[in-house]
Length: 438
Image 1: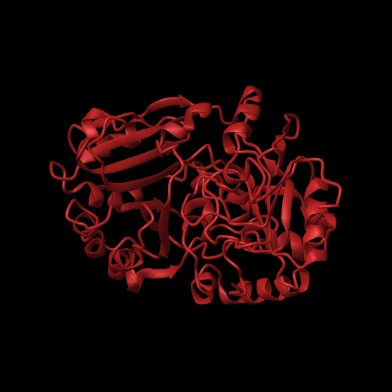
Image 2 (image 1 turned 90 degrees about the vertical axis):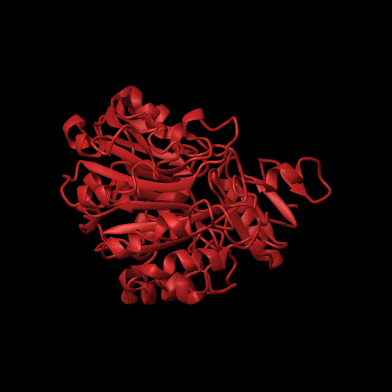
């Protein structure tokens, strides 16, 4: 590679290639011809120009959960070394570079009494999370992370480093339209004066408390916007890394995040009986990852997501059986309560769609086996209530119609036109192409 790159470069014959191409997602890893480990925005620009000159496809990998569509050949740009976070306490903003995780952002902002609209897993890359919309722990109070982006620095497919906010169409598309329009090297986000949450998880044995899902469903209809919550249904493996009370149990994990006093709000859920494990209490925002307590080990996994207009009681009742101990593959069902500020349009319009969705439902399975048919059986009872999907929770290659379902028709049409404008040669390989280009 003759183009000047300050960061490391690998080919398949270079030591370190295998480790660099792998991310958190170990299903169908990237197989690039070359890898550039970007250390500056200029590295990204130079790498894109090299790919453009040599007719190579380009994919970017930040930190966190990673890709859904493997790159075969072409050029992979990894941004984990480009991870600076700069906080402006007076204006309550932070500038975050492409490879920064939410943990890095949280660690930088909390000393100033401020918090970002981070997600349930601190190890997720902050920028790809935000470009996909960003559904966080304070979402019902403050909205999508994409609603609170002030500036974006991006290398577009023509190899130019730009300030996206100077181009209203590009700025609109990036906030919710994913990685279809370039490689973002940095963005400025709003921060909020939050230092603590009342949160954690209540783990109930579904054999002992069969009404837990319906109780949570009714509870979500009564809570204020300060409450953002979810429920996960899974069978915990009977292995030592799992806390002893949960091993081998079919569990409903109520995941709770409350701004302000939450003891009385949570009391209704505690009346279900004695939980297997109770981690709910006041916690500093630096420990917000304890609320969902998601696995931190890289793995192979697939997931499918739908957005719902309601949480139908009959469909809800099918989940324990379809994803229970008798299922032929492990399935983790995650349901998140939406509404509140998520339903409100942002001050500056963006591409996030389906703001009228009431709940998000995701089914995820670890391992490399194809469980698409199993996932579809679990989702089938919800067919009449599906109004779209959320791309951030769709860890499987989607076809054109499935990607289209993530947006309302006018938004999708506008995104496809902008994709053609900014990337006419289909240089980029994003997770979910808005044109359906493979």
